[in-house]
Image 1 (cartoon, each protein chain N blue to C red):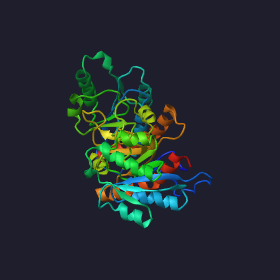
Image 2: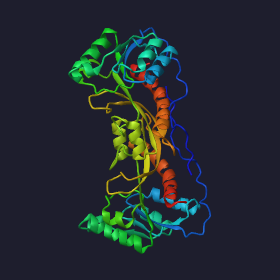
Image 3: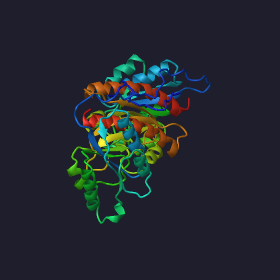
Image 4: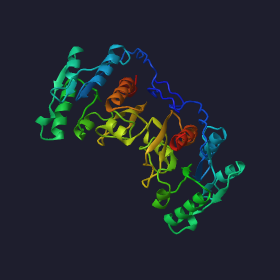
Length: 212
Length: 212
């Protein structure tokens, strides 16, 4: 009865090169907790000249996060800050901010950063911290967004890039992409399709945010 | 940087005729509070043979609802039940149910029915009451969904057809369509684009619900 496409994306297939400029490249520190595929989408867009930026540091908080090896392959310093070594979220964020600032970061991209942030981080990077979340916010903020969308029986989900505020997944939205949930979708198949859209919108949203 | 289409619809442009059957047409009572354009989309789909159904009655609750004139043009009895004449939601729903049943309704479609329903109605039409709502639920349930989506700054909204339960706009979802919010959109322009999708998915979702 319906013909379903694999994506409902608003996103044009190609991101053209960033316009030429004499301005110095934006310096974007990346925070990641896991696989790091969104980090890879971002650094690839930079390598392809689609964003005029540098990633001076990747900070990760799980010793076995695959993002560390990805950063290494790109020659980017990867710094482990293990939140379990800290007494408070604020103390952890203090060291995160210090590492970001020492590396020269002007912007933060949270590419799968599974930590609540505090005003220690927000106040140092006001409107300069960007997060990507695997739902069409305001639906399904917080953890396990894809599984919760599946369980809720929605027919369309997606992903959202937004500025980070103290309230989890509630900051001003930069960009969204819709992804249909298909008959027979599992957590894995849906996650894979949402990730394709994440990798498409994250570089575009970052470019929009930094004004290129 | 992005190329935005006017719709992200999953919906195929044409709804083929309902398959032939000897079964009697489904009888669908319609509840509407306002303009009645969703009623018109439904009766048009029936007239075009896309749904094998009849609409034996349209109930409206505002004396000046334009849906009454629309029903008249289609030769369908339109019955005014003014909720302001009732002491309780239950007493109102009792008369709504009585009018629906007397007209032979087996299903209910709420095509812009701006009333909370009670178990008086739900219990008489279990899993046979269908509502259409102008957002991608679970985002923006309740009133003024389109204005609230605009105010929230989301980039994608849409509409949802779902079964009615006691919790407002929270029943099982039958069908959804996504609608991008474009730069310069006003309440009026966005409402118009969402309505196009409402008119597309309501007949399809009704057909899905009644099993044709």
